[in-house]
Image: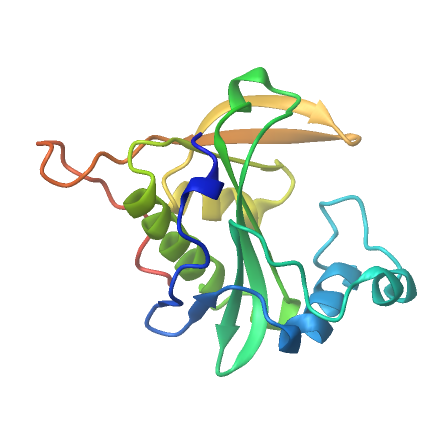
Length: 192
């Protein structure tokens, strides 16, 4: 993957039918702490960290870095989506590719917000770095995440064992730039 550092950052907020996907701001701090401390959110991620530790370690404003997006609904943060360059991975095939990650507060689950926000970020990524493949890893036991990966167009590359659980690694094939003669497939833009 070409380093996101070469991409103009931050991009203008991405607006979908129901969401705003944007760079983190100081007003998001409380929701970020809630997200990282949530036992439900971290069920398949090794468990939550203590709220006191997170409060103490987190700066006044959440980290702003290329590839980190906050997802907002009705003016409040409900989750985050990240795209980072995978420089180390248990599966060598993932190294050097963009890695999609997402976390949403439990109150935002079941409404299709993750699909809508991830599709918006992937659409943005296709526009700024066309032709770059994207990987996504999740526990096979996380059925919601497995369904979302399929909805977004990720196909299985391999399974591996890590963190005391079976993991799934998926690949979303590169989307070619418009006008190249290739037909783009459905990339999960229906957010439902």
